[in-house]
Amino acid sequence: GPARRCRAAGTIAGSATCLFDCMKRAVLDMGVPLEMRPRRDPEPRRSIGIDADYGSLDAGRYGNVVLVDDKLDILKVVRHGEVIGLKD
Image 1 (tube, rainbow, N blue to C red):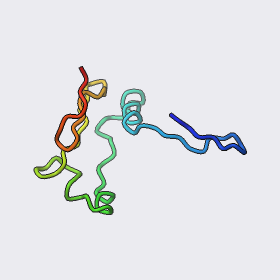
Image 2 (tube, rainbow, N blue to C red):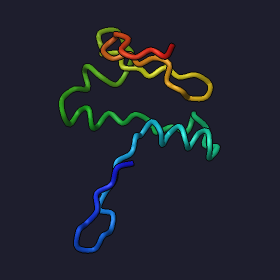
Image 3 (tube, rainbow, N blue to C red):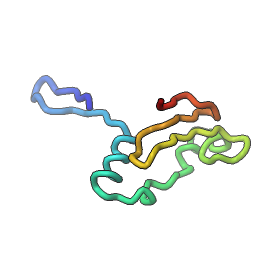
Image 4 (cartoon, rainbow, N blue to C red):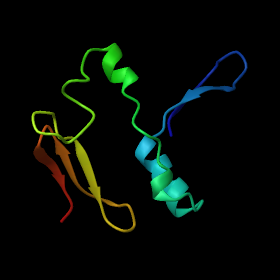
């Protein structure tokens, strides 16, 4: 992923990565069972006041979902209950 270098020392100061890609690699390349995914922690949602709207697929909450195939390739993305991405 992209990285920024410190001019003085030429070392990597930070980088960015896609969490989904990390999860996909852990499952497919490292053999981590998909069931071992991190559990949803409600505390971050509570701390910013959105826990009533997010965090489950219950009626009245925002339905944010990533649908994948057996190779964990993204097929559809559903945000606030609407499909925003579709693999042809």
